[in-house]
Length: 59
Image 1 (cartoon, helix red, strand yellow):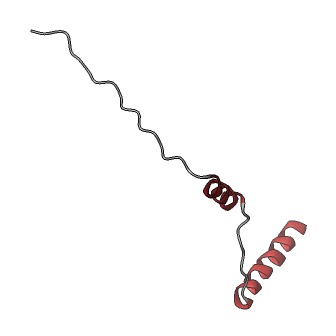
Image 2 (tube, rainbow, N blue to C red):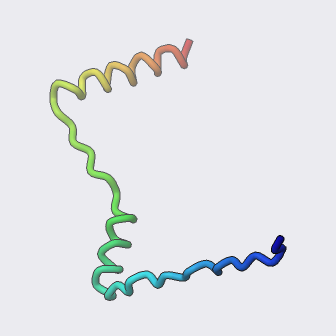
Image 3 (cartoon, rainbow, N blue to C red):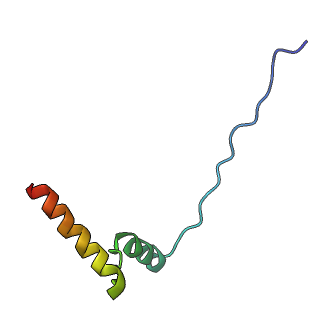
């Protein structure tokens, strides 16, 4: 019976190098603030929830 087992070492894969412009664009997308759109029909609900929260916090 053989006790010597040979295992292959891990393979190291190199990631593709990105050019500076693509890297800069990716970083800008990650740090950009989200855009919030408000519509007339949904904003009343939000405003009412704020008023209700203020009322309960004062009591």
